Image (cartoon, rainbow, N blue to C red; front, side, top):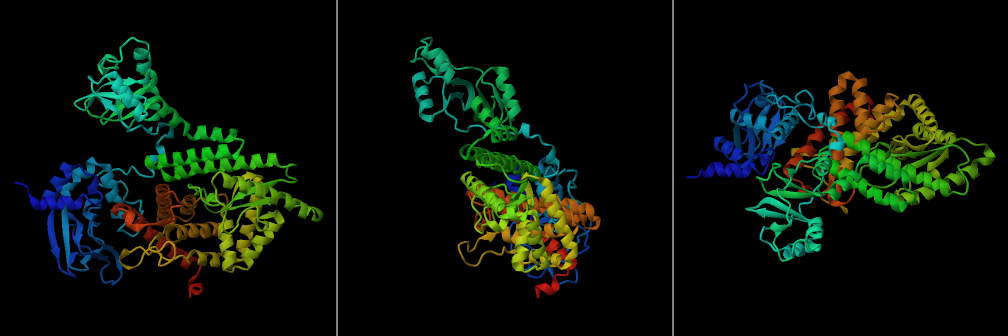
Length: 639
């Protein structure tokens, strides 16, 4: 007789992470051991410093508040599907917080001894619980607890750096066309033609036993060797050469060369004992190799027009999507895509210079600003750029600026052709306000820093992330030195810059609700850029500027450098580095999914796990803003 209670428990748990990735038999076994607990409003589940229970808890209905003893301040609210009370599973020590029912609540108590083997067997489960545990500590990206789940190591962002991109999994076709041994050759040939495939799989009892390709039809049927009225068995290649679906590009190349065949059959376990899940052709491997960064880089350098570069840009986006699907570390992904973007822009600039009637009159630098300058423009968004050129005599100023404005305009037009939209605020090198000599840029930045009004702070925030894409780096270095000297000369500027970093509203309100847009075109959407990314980016900028560190523009790398410079804040800065990469990855995935910038998120389209991961960054944002407020004494400016 079925246990209907345990079935209901299993049906509930499988909707939420990490239980949704458990095998059915694991989930059913665990559900049978779950204890259902009812808590009245204001009743305590466990108290601070209480000895650990033999369970951790999942909220079925209601809400649980996590607080410090004697404090009315709620540190976290756990609602339906949330996990809490992981300390006995993770740290083997007394509870650090008190858990109290905020309303009438039903909990599922998961026995640790029953769950432990599952966590050991499935690293994804272990990693999720490690992060969930850390998110209820002071630092949601704490490195203290990583890899502490009964010996389960964390295979996340850090360790994955060792993955070789040349060993990335290859994409294969899941459009399987099959037939039986008795299928007439004419019929199977028509099926191949109708489905536009180069091969057909011969199966028996749903298992692959043979394969027929275009080559077989040409060499065996078209030549008259085998009549077209015969069946599949007469021309199929057997046994089928099978490999696991986790086949890498390198392995696929080796397999095709070794067996001298054009198609591989991929199955669940790599043998003919399980059904086929896909077909991999030699063409698929060539396409995968074509999306290799080194191949794309060579193609960029050979391109001579925007049409070809636009095609390459599509390949870069495909590469980005593949990296995200393979969970390649975000730091590594940013570097690769940014290098390809920079190379693309550099090639555009070179092509445009070659098209000018005369070469540049003096040395110059093309500066990428904003997200591109930080190496965080993974999706194709709008342009933010400027030109910096050598000082010239007074009588040459107008002529020189005219040349570079014409060049800037030509470059901006070509960048638009390959997919980089024009900046709505016209912060582009084609605008006289963003095309200056070194001395003029010094005067502009000195004015911003000496008169830090809202507009000047905004312009500084965009410009000070500049990075050299093309030209004379020494010019940019001299300008950076000037900016650092002015930062010391005008200490109040850093306070105003810090104030600007605190203007973006908090990502969440009470009860952990996302703060969404209240009106306008994006009403009820969550502004990921404004409420989450910008606060953490702006804080990194003002902190790195206060240390006079140049040539580190990427937000995650800025926090890594800050962790070295300020050991006492190492934990927070490390958390900020992780959070910035997590948010960038989230935005990029959303942008690819919806074919937009990924800025505005429809919360009702996120699953529970996505919401949990997003919310984990919010505590880090709150803490870094608190540090900024205290360090730069912003309190009076915020009144």
